[in-house]
Amino acid sequence: RPGPRGSMVVSSQVARPRGGSKLNVEWFVRDMGAGYKVLDVAVEGVSLVVQQRSELAALLDQSGGDIDAFIKALSAYAV
Image (cartoon, rainbow, N blue to C red; front, side, top):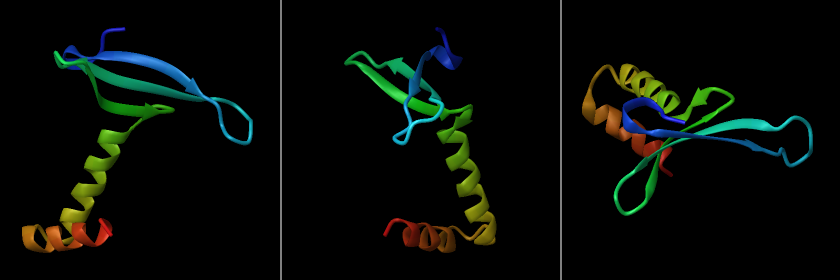
């Protein structure tokens, strides 16, 4: 189905490894000419892009808006 800003939304369900109800997953994709690219993934309505943006904003706030401190804190997560 059509999605935001020219994307398409592909809906799927993913089985849990130990059984139980399936997870609803929506893939937001866009045709980039050489194939489709995934722009975002939402699991049970929770967007990965929105979640990451929120976490980065909180980390920047914790760094007092100091970009050097932010990069240092971000680097600690990359290990």
